Image 1 (tube, rainbow, N blue to C red):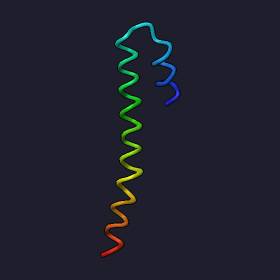
Image 2: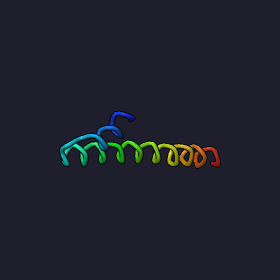
Image 3: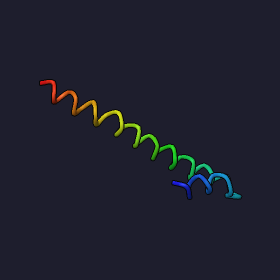
Length: 48
């Protein structure tokens, strides 16, 4: 993940910066979805 952050900051080409930024946002979104969704599913099934 640190490589993506450095890639956003140090790349000369706009395309590389945008690609690295989108990948970083995607990874963070996946972690956020898992961090919220997985406990919510477990909680839902344990209440039944």
